[in-house]
Every structure is written in C-alpha cells, then in structure tokens.
Amino acid sequence: MKNVLFLQARLNSKRLPSKVLLKIKGKTILEHIVNRLKQSKKIDDIFILTSKSKKDNMIFDLCNKIKINCYRGPENDVLKRFYEVAVNLNVEYIVRCNADCPFIDYKILDEMIVKFEKYRKINYLSNILQQTFPIGMHIEIFTKNTLVLAQKFCKSKNRREHVTPYIYNNKKFKIKNFSSLKNLSYHRWTIDYKEDYLFAKKIYNTLYNDKKYFDMYDILKLLSKKPELMKINYHIEKTNNLIR
Image 1 (tube, helix red, strand yellow):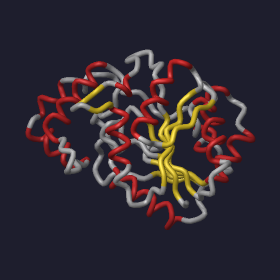
Image 2 (cartoon, rainbow, N blue to C red):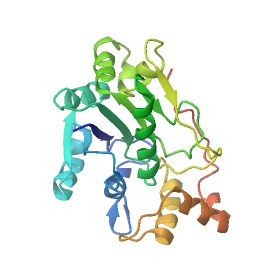
Image 3 (spheres, one colour):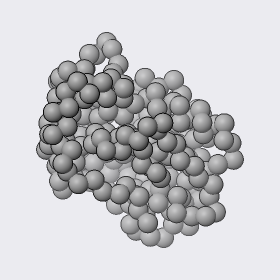
Image 4 (cartoon, rainbow, N blue to C red):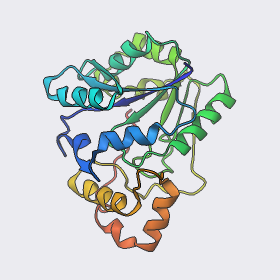
C-alpha cells in the first residue's frame, strides 16, 4: 500500500454525544463518511481509529457490520493510537480525517494527495493551516516517518490528543497549506451541535442518492438557491482548529 486513511471516531462528544452514530437517510453519519471516502482513487485502505473505552464498543460493532478496518487504542493519547496502527503498515503516506465531517469530499482529498506527491520532500500538507475551505472539509496528509518522529518526541498531552499539532508547530518539519481558490471558510459543515445535524439532514435529504455522489460544489449550488438553510447553524461561533 502507498496511502492509508485514518478516520478517528469516538462516542464521548460532550456537545453532541454519539454524534457519529446519528442517522441520515437510513445510514449513520460514520457510514456516510466512509462511503464518501471509499470513492477516492488515491487511497489504498481505510481504518477507523477508536478507543478501547467500553462506550466506543458500538463503533467497533458498526465497523464489523460494514466490514471496515477498525483499530482500538488509547482514549486520550490519539497520537499513539495512530502510531500503533501505522508502524505495522507498509505505507508511505497517512491521511487523517475526522468522523464529524459528513460532507468530506474525496475529490479534494485526491487533489491534495497529488499535490503532496508533487512537492516531494515535505512532511505535512493540510487545508487547515490557513482556513479557506468550509469548516468540516478538513484533511491532513503526512509521511509515516513524520508520524514516527512525532510519537517519539511529542511530550505534550494536549498535542498528543490532537495528533498533528507537534508536526505543524515544529520548524524541523516542512509543511504546506492547500488553499481553496475562493475563501469558503464561512461555511459550517461539521457536526458539533444539534443544529449542525439538522443542517446536514437538510442537505442530504435534497442531494443524497446512493447511486450518485454529491460534492462540495453541489452543496454550494444548493445553498446559493436556498440560502435560508444557512440560518440553521451558521450562527454557531467558529473556533480555531489549530492547537498551539
């Protein structure tokens, strides 16, 4: 394998508990995300990374049901969780996504992987260093060796919980940002609150078809026709995704 995608998921979200198992159009949010990422032409395999906590048993059970790889590691040391999986895989690049992004777009993902490969000799590429994509379209790519170094030298519990801050805050690593041609950062497409879930349901109820993929631009077109949908959750204060 060359590229593997790690999708981290948990059920102990304080703001919207068990959000990844909430259903839209008969499928859990986690299933929708996996199905969207499976469309990628650049990803060789997908792993769901969850914790050993009993409360995450349902994620493990769902992964078995939909036949997707699942690894269970430390609950708070997510960096170690990533490392434990990666160290046993013969891969070059690791892609990190989160399980609260129901509109993640494989086309953007594939474009970023192509860009990462062209840059060569860089350690890390993401679209979060300078936010220009919608909130919830977050993708990070880094080499396996970079992850190994982060596991070895990162001592901060906070940074280990968030996996990549040690990498993008460290001058020893060569990092790049992937930006949208147009600033779309005012869009809120993640799921943290009930309003976000209601917004996602509205989008899926209009655009979802299990035989046809809808991408970021389909959502933008819909919102241009029905701007009132943005009133559902766009009032929620956006937070900086970067951990320093």
